[in-house]
Length: 315
Image (cartoon, rainbow, N blue to C red; front, side, top):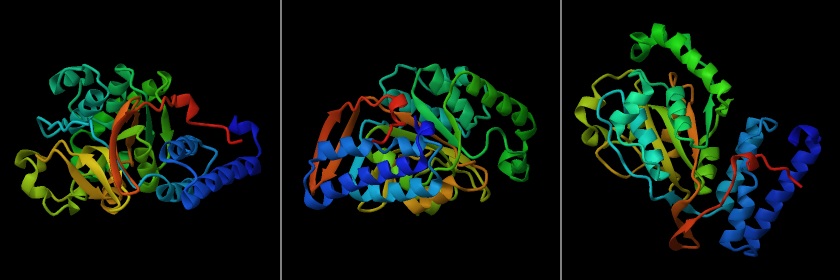
């Protein structure tokens, strides 16, 4: 395991792997399928605590240049939320339907969730109920009392603090994979480009509004007119390296397909109030569209990457 290896050995392993990938890119020695196979080996770095954020980011930047130019998970459906508070349930429903899991509709998930003050940890419990494999990354394990200054949280925060802290404790006891750390947009793009992940991210809806057409297409009763922080969940299901944009599914929007720049998504994800919460759901069989060497292909692949194998041992 990583803990049993010297740091120098781990870093040499990473550099050797990147060298192999670099040769494959520069000299064209590796075909797409083989390049992707090698690329998957480094995804364990994203989830391995022995690697610091700087190393993760640098490797992600390299990987963005080495793996296919564009890939999107095309089977993710767009589902609109029904009320002002159930965007998270709509996002979970999108993930479950992508996996082919029969879970009913948003009212069915509402009964399982048992609250209208939905936090990311509540969505984690929902995914766990349906045996979905995922990682939960956050910078705060529990409810942050400092959010009391935000009008979005003021009404429910006193009650939520005790409930949410309890939800985190139960989640850890149930074996839900929660990691207390930040993840950057570059790392997310690499994971999305693998074709193995779909993400549910908590964002500040108003900072995501750098899309100029947002107010026109968002449901009026959901968008609202406030200018302060407004928590909102979206699904991240694709990335285009040429335009540096993510493909998202926004449950508050009437548009089925939307794109947002990496910079805009990062600002919305890392706004005060989000805890940078993100759920990275592992997709077992994924239909993807790949733009590789200016040729677009659509195919189904099963990479058969078990969660336990994400933390690979570099040779």
